[in-house]
Image 1 (spheres, helix red, strand yellow):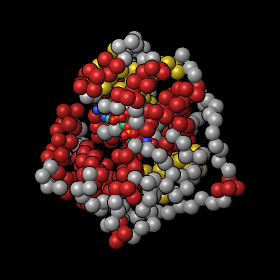
Image 2 (cartoon, rainbow, N blue to C red):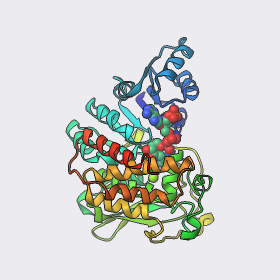
Image 3 (cartoon, rainbow, N blue to C red):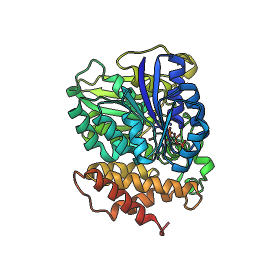
Length: 380
Ligand code: NDP
Ligand code: MG
């Protein structure tokens, strides 16, 4: 049995990871963690019987403790609990599927205790990539991408020399507003932005896909995962989401990974790597597909993507400001407090007011996050 822990088990990636476990039948779940959805967490505990479950919210943790007192499971809470779930002795792999920068500390702790990381939580790598990648190397731990684009790149690197990579071509669906003009984009409501054309995901990443900030975060994620220079990453809009991403080599050859969009494939690939397990489900039918199309991203309409390249080039604490400003702006947009097009405006304002700190430690990263939040509080 392969033993895994899942941080963020009640979310979109978390529940799909458990589906993979259900289908494969040889994954043992040692620990689960969620924020506050104790109803679903209880069902997961009863089905998968982990030894440990972490709930961020202390009150909810107390409630869950009472509800599962007939089970042999320890319920922990807060950051301490999340770290306990990340370092639980028996797990070999930790799936990091929490949303946001809250994932930094548990991911670092998991690496320090020698766990392989199946990484979905891109915000962690965007903000603390320099720390995570160095640490993983030092501890001899692999970071296996779960994000579909990065999994595609990772698969396209199989058997090749990384020194010969010329470019990483990250594909993007373009989101629901790909063909909208600026005027129309000013009228976007949360319910419009929550409709993604090809993928079913959590709320935050769905909004990030609509602004293309998600692609911006993925560009920075790719930079750390594959150790390439910013100018070696190119975004290619491909509305059908069939090519999940590509690698261009120095001889001009391009390797790609294609398939029906389904997050269970990259999740499963990360959990069983280097093995490729069978998976049921739909297959890509080229005759039905007919054609694949490609466009250059419009950085005028999608300022969030443009700002990501700027943040990446500034480096240091700037990607944290980009990410933190976006997190809070998305929350404000979902609460109906700001307009859709204000999301990149807020990111830009926070970035312009920030003085980059190079090579920040975890404390400085968290301070930069706080600084961005404080700039937004009261102003928007
Ligand atoms: P969801 O919002 O669906 O799920 C988030 C999960 O994190 C939930 O289980 C939530 O618990 C948990 N969580 C949030 N805060 C905490 C906390 N403080 N302590 C413990 N658990 C917490 O997000 P997604 O699954 O969509 O995304 C997760 C990550 O994966 C993100 O970083 C996203 O960018 C990335 N990703 C997602 C993809 C997708 O297809 N969904 C694709 C590629 C990457 P609760 O339910 O109790 O709130
Ligand atoms: Mg992705």
